[in-house]
Amino acid sequence: MNRPGFVLEVDERTPPLLIAEGAGCRLERLPLGTRVAYPAESRPGIDPALAIGRALTEPVGAVPLGDLLRPGIKVAIVFTDGARPAPAMARPDIRTEALEQILSLAAAAGIDDVQLVAANGLRRLASEAEIRGLVGERVHRSFASDGLIGPHDAESPDLVELAPGVRVNKVVAEADLVIDVSVVSELEHTGWQQLATGVTGAAESWAQLRGGADAKAADDVVAVLAEHLTVWHLEIVLDQSQFAPRLGFLGKREWEWNVRDRANALALRRLQQFAPHRVRRLLLDVPSAPYGVLAATGGETSAVGEVSRGILLDQQRVDVGAQADIVIAGPAPVTEHNQDAVMNPLIAAWDTLARTFGAHTGQPAVRQGGAMILFHPLPQEFNARFHAASADFFAEVLPLTTDSARIHAEHEERFVSDEWYASLYRTQNAFHGTHPLQLWDAIQPAAAHCSDIIWVGADRASAERLGHRAASTLADALEIASGSVGRNPDILHLHTPASLIADVTA
Image (tube, rainbow, N blue to C red; front, top):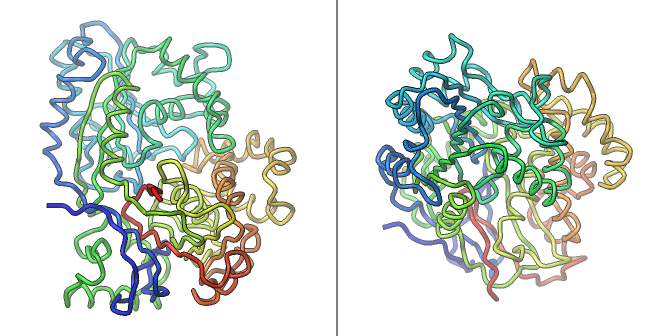
């Protein structure tokens, strides 16, 4: 029986507690009285093959998929990998099962015009090896030789304009039926979001992402897609499992560790002290994480999204009580922004100040004018292949200003239109030039909400460049924060990962 999330209050008997810090973690003794919010344990998974089969035949808000399949139509199957942490590295990937069942239905209906699109939008284009890992060897072998499977290119000259200002992938635009397969583990990835940003042109996708999320731009794009495309949506909700068996202690409550867990924790800490960053990151990566499936739902896109949102809320919501003066958190090892790459300062800030801060049911866990104390070394290291635009943004723009309005006014055009960034995106699997702007915009609500953002154990120059502060220890960070929240603050530690949605109820 899985246990729900809960809040622990630190007392004299509480052992040192885990705090994530990207490609590593640490054990910290937290001040007495600190509230610690633990996420719920994963609910029992279901048989994914049976769940997907049922979703195809018993949809919500739409007819069964088989009723839409008939000889002579063009079918585009779109699949995305926006879940976090990205299960694309798991083997076998759950999308393999979904695609094989869909293709079996299409073959039984006599359809011979099917193409597959990996729709990552402005994230980096999936490589052939990554696509093979997502769809499985059999599906890839059947479609790749004829050029019928590949990534969506948001800068492609072949985009088709469905309506003024809304261009989409040519394969998608010309299809009689679009089947969208999404894997989700967070609220913002449900419904239309991944398709609307995943198969549109760079300008359209950027308009939806700019400033955190332009609701009108997103609504306008969704309205066009709904009007011009016939979309049948399949959404697969993942459970909370995020660590390989050898690292299972990271998902346990610390006072329940056995001797082996304590030995593994000690070994991990020593490895972090001496091993190169790449080795540490690979150890905490997710290729062998035992992903489970909570649900699979098919049918009309918005209706499917609502079902998935309800499931995610039931799994991840934790009553944290009142808003805190200080929230302590740290980034997870892997996000959709740093697969196979170091977690640079912009991604660490996004993971804590956008994803973690924004994971709530109405009010953030930290009060207005409160402080966030975050754990990450913030190395000034950027993957030269994937994050070229972010490296330039960090080195050339942030030293001039951290003001978001000025950044957009003076520098946005460069990152949106630069031909070099576009070329890296199209040919070298780099993130689009707008990527650092997306990350920066996403952290601004937290920056405006908090009086202090303090990074423990961070490169001081990196923290200052972000407009934040650095401290050597948690005690130092609390001393710094005391200037804005007082000497006896109410402290809340968000014990993530796994995912947690804060429900402020007091």
